[in-house]
Length: 283
Image (cartoon, rainbow, N blue to C red; front, side):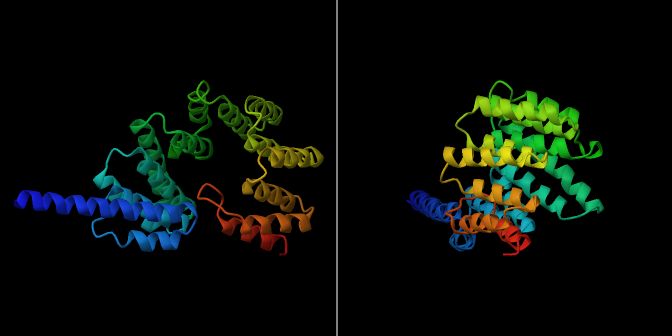
């Protein structure tokens, strides 16, 4: 009898935890991070999904220290979670970015790389981890485990499974080498391979604007809007491009206002980015 009582108590707790995480996840997807945290705090016996979602909320709120603490607790309960390792790496990366040239920045950067590499070792099909590790290799110096040679190997690893993204990564590598002609070729090939993907048009638009080819850039932003009329990130990208080039500032302000009023998800850049750009535009 005592065994069954204990079993039903554990089952009830597990169901309660699942319900809490489900409700909190809905708030998270609507970028209501603070209320999501309030729901998660009601869990009397938090499990790995609770700690993971709690950490993601703190990450989105910019509290990377608390995020790391939560991700590590999640890994204590589920040590083979590729997703949690990915998010832990992202949080260490943000701490590294915010630490300047201090010795701690190097430690955080090394932990970033280690977490991304472990995430891929745990799940070779974790696309986000592969993307983030590529970015790390491309931008981090060799003494921290980065390097263009490693980025090239990482890019080749997705060539057959994700050709458009492979071309995008090859473009980034070419840009790192100041081979802008090759970068443009790869960006155009990425568009050809994914003609319905507005993101590829935005990538090329941003690139051409940086090369001073603004009319072509404008046409591509218009093409991106037609491909994905409801995608708020396009407005943010075009506003950023206009502000960087000191042009169309009234239009940029309108685009940023529309972004701030849009129904964003955690996959969209945070509203704080739009607010910073709006201040730069004099809004």
